[in-house]
Image (cartoon, rainbow, N blue to C red):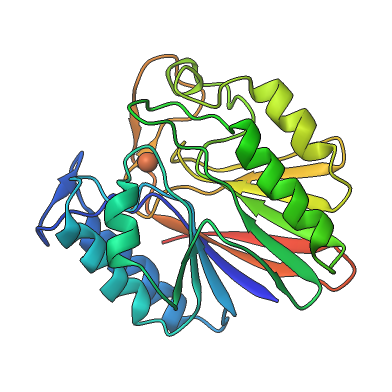
Length: 246
Ligand SMILES: [Fe+2]
């Protein structure tokens, strides 16, 4: 099974809306064009939040139009910049699924909500962990790809880690404690991350728009281009990923 991971498009209702000098709709279009033009096709898309920047219905409609054109299932989770009520209104049905947990072939694709109202940082509430663990236990496949907006690890950038996951060590331990979870996929940090933590691979994908400078103590943008990630999930629980810079 092939998964196209893209994250943090930060769209605006206005087609010319810019995030720190990048026109985000155009930048997402470049990512999608690159995907379409390449010799690699996905079975589904995972988009890990910060779909919009301006809290507008128009920006979500833009996301729905741009992603809908791929004619693939699109699994989304909310980020700190998202407005859940607008997501539900504008992405209410297939191809879009919000924070869903679904079995497909030999894998479980599990979206987790890490958004905390009013905060840039994230957390996984007990009830959300219980929903995840019950769904993983009930599903037949033995391998799970869990995806969320916030990173369950510090990335080594002081300002970003200060708006990261609350109690990240405990979150990572609880995620790793589930015997089906093979990998956790996230966005939020607008930079690449791919590290093994015990039995768990923790994978962050850069944004489809503006990136942040890795390992920076203070807020700093990076001049790296937009990116997306290709993931190939194998029936035995192994997987390969390729990060694609545009
Ligand atoms: Fe973001």
